[in-house]
Amino acid sequence: MIVTVNGERRDLPRSATIASVVELLGVMPGGRGVAVALNGEVVARGDWRRTALREGARIEVVRAIQGG
Amino acid sequence: MNRLSPQLRIAGRELRSRLILGTGGFANHEVLAKALAASGSRLCTVALRRLDPGAGGSILDVLDAAGVDVLPNTAGCFTARDAVLTAQLAREAFATDWIKLEVIGDDRTLLPDAVELVAAAEELVDEGFVVLPYTTDDPVLARRLEDIGCAAVMPLGSPIGSGMGICNPYNISIIVERAGVPVILDAGVGTASDGAMAMELGCDAVLCASAISRAHDPAAMARAIRLGIESGLLARGAGRIPRRRYALASTTDEGVPVFE
Image (tube, rainbow over all chains, first blue to last red):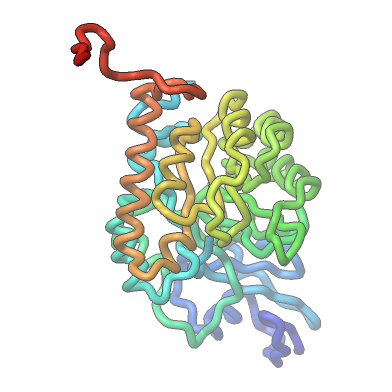
């Protein structure tokens, strides 16, 4: 299944969830300071494990950086 | 509202410092940590960007170690839609309802887009956010943002990162006179005297990033701006003398000796 994570195409198993994408990026469990949008909608941290992905999903994973 | 109380209160939260530190532009986290300590700030802005798995330690570690609160911003957003989504992501990431709302209209001046800003502020207030909008120094727009329900207004002194200070002090003082919410001077501060001026004009706090982070000695500038802000607040409370066009002698004319 092809999805887009932070602008990059990735081939993930059909069982992939938001949680597996976040882990793929090396975020520690708990994921403080990290948030996820799926197809332009925020996915609450508590829903990461049960949110399945579909072909063509667009996922943005963001975290805090220095900023004005 | 009482603009002279020693503590700043925004949306029911007391802040023990009137300097909000923007964390953008510091060379590294160590320089930031030293400047943060010197600034005395209790609230720091952070931005959200795509997670880079190769990046080093988190800025949150620096802020947590200093015991300061996080104020996420929507820097980089050009539409109300993007700003609202970014605020929602920030609420999820940092477990805070506070958001410094920036909706930029032009990538050269980085001036706010008033139309998109108002639209985003309305939506975020409706969603229960504590909205601190970065706005122009237009008193009418500031009033509109307050009427919507923003917890403070953050007029610019001059464009972001310009170091031009407060270009229109008359507008800032009009905003202050008419505001029922805290006024935080945001953007344009270049040095300590700009912080003092903001407070003398009646602002409740100052947000400062580049003036500190890009100074030759960020920690020294952080302390200077902190003292400038304290100085300006004291001066405002002390009541300055009126300006006059002609001199007024401070020494009496009585008893002047005659030498002829």
